[in-house]
Each structure stands twice: as structure tokens, then as C-alpha cells.
Length: 244
Image (tube, rainbow, N blue to C red; front, side):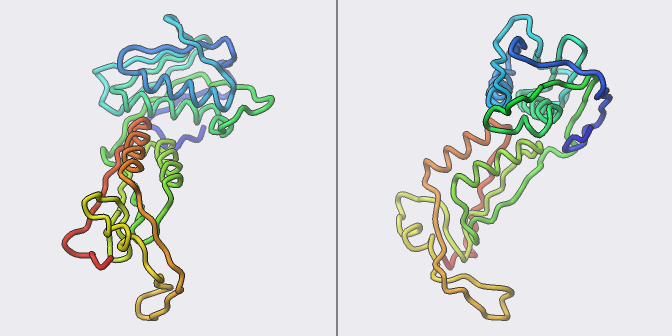
């Protein structure tokens, strides 16, 4: 089966499956609470599955100190799903893999009519090759609304990327609120026009462009990313790149 990113090892039998339904239960040990809540929320939205808590669950999560921090292992047999991970973050990557194994419908935000939910029997074991797996968004040159950033964090988590690198300041715009210096955003977050094409052409579109994130926006983004196993890395260019 196709998994993104490809795991280190996977032995799955798509012809033999464990069915998930309203009676399927979910439970976890210490340190897996976030991953448990995330899986319950996501599959509740897409599949209408309540995944009620049980001390003897069908889907069981646990941490194992013998595994690397972001490593995980998923074992599916005819009766249960056993998920072990090296850390809270590893547990989150594991439940993201479970969603992928359920198919694209599991990424819906509302129940899918007539959908049948099942997992292939077998095992998946994975561990990241690189500790820093980042994506850069240059919001200084091209501002993106907060809702777009939150959506981007969801996409990072789905692909097990763990750093959102935000380029927040440059000549073209200052993008975060500093309460002591309000003109940084009153003036510096907007420009009258934007360059079109390459610099030597000298073309401008004559359309105002701008925006910025409040401190509350950034706190929300950091918390949202942390719940999904990612870190926000802000970049503030000084003393150069300050024409904004």
C-alpha cells in the first residue's frame, strides 16, 4: 500500500482486514493522550466512529523507551491494533499512518455516507531519517492569512514533517505584531505594489499587498502545530532586509 513518506518496513495484506465500527474502542497509556484524542477526533469527523475509551481497547497505544523518539510500530491482527512509539510525537506519526491506511476518505471533515472502515492486517515500522523535516513559507514577500497557515500545518502533519519555517520579515513586508512599535505593522506590513517577473525587468503590478499576524495569531499557530507534532520556527532578518 502507498504510504507517504514510505516507511522503513511494511508487511501488509490488503485482502485480510480488521473492520472498524461503532463498537471499536480506543485506549492508551501515559504519554499517548494527545495521539489518542487526535485519532478519536479525526475518525469521529470522517467516519462517525465514537472510538470510546476502554481499558482493554481494540486500538491500543503505548510508549516504548526502547524505540527512538519519533519511531513507531503498528501491528494489526484479526482482533486488535497495537501501536507503540518512542515518544508522544512518534505516537502522533503512528496515528497519521493509521489514517492513511484507512484511505483518503479518512481525511474528510464530515462523515462519509456509506463508507466502510477497515485496516489491512500486518505491520508497519518507521523512524525518520532526519530529525529536522521542515517546510519554508515566505510570508514576508507573499502574506498568507492565518487560516492558510493552519491548513498548511495539517498538511505538514499528514506527511510527517515537523518544522514550519516562517520567513516573517524582509524588504517586502513585516509580518508580526510588536506592541511597543506599532508602526512596524501599520506601515511596514503593507506595500503599494509588487514586483512582477524578474528584478531587471522593472515591472510592478500597482496593487497594494499586505497583512500581519497578531501575537495571539502566532500563539494559536504554535499551539496548533504542537498538537500535530510540529514546531514553528520564526525567522526575523536583522539588520539587513529591513526596507519594509
